[in-house]
Length: 180
Image 1 (cartoon, rainbow, N blue to C red):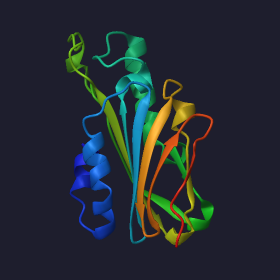
Image 2 (tube, one colour):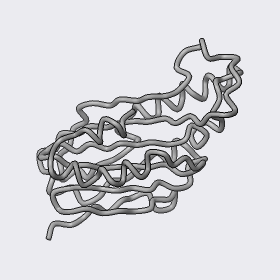
Image 3 (cartoon, rainbow, N blue to C red):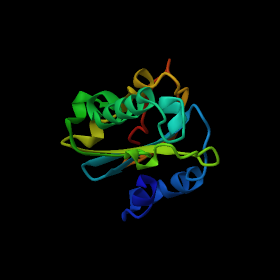
């Protein structure tokens, strides 16, 4: 899980994000996702976690061709860093890595009745930025890709400080902490 990976990142700024990630780790509310942003030098890492229901409308192994297609479409949307999140051009950031974890990635789960469990999707986006201090906002495109997504609870730890925000479809631009 990406939240687990992020918890183990070493560095003063990264440790600031740990309380958010630890507290958020067990939360599971349909329509609500979590986004964390951690800056470590010129590297910006964004971690996204959402109940699968918020992305595709179900949390069980796919039972139909349409459900399998919905999972594939959700994975493709999460893997596209350019549309998932947009960082300000002034920061001159380049996506270096995208990792997505989706449940039910194989058809071996097909037919299982998973009503007693919750399923989450996770994505991690790693950017290298030539001017990270110029990053004042992030625009989240995930609301357009996933209409069931109603709120993203976001938290940042950057060289400029820490900050929280609640993002919604009508307000998908996240203003990051400003340099003091």
